[in-house]
Image 1 (cartoon, rainbow, N blue to C red):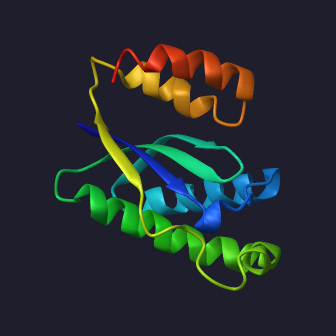
Image 2 (cartoon, rainbow, N blue to C red):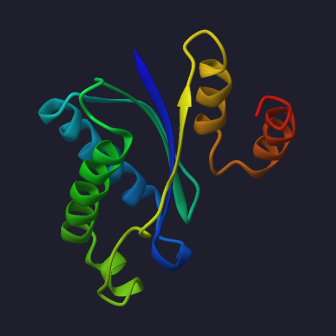
Length: 136
């Protein structure tokens, strides 16, 4: 089983993840999981970036997985939320780069899961983040 923790910032680190955009993102990710062998274990948004905990098959590289996720989510969010496209000057939704790390099933999956779930909650983030430093 391959688990990946991805972090994807919005273009220019713009604050674009409102509650409605967050809900749309999660709907689109559900559709992606139906069409591809990409399972979203957790999705956590925090105003200007998203954390994904994704499980996939060995034939998809980490780069291929995030290319699929970023391209489809960007297209669908721009379609459903034209105001977001305006905020980003009609350009791209995601930055070019991303963070990815593997997650061990028996090592730190639960820690990463909690971290992703707590995105956007400043006080809980700081507490968990200080605990996280000793794991990485």
